[in-house]
Image (tube, rainbow, N blue to C red; front, side):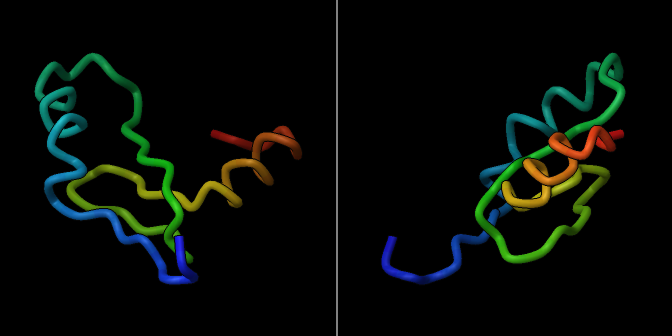
Length: 61
């Protein structure tokens, strides 16, 4: 990677959207290299750094 941010696209979420149709999962999470968290169609897009921080602090919900 050359310093450019890598953003999640609709195509990247295709598999998670298919899983959402099963209605058996508690949450849908896409861990990525984006600079900030966001939610798209009920899928939480989370920067990997935030996930690591939350897990190490024992506060991932």
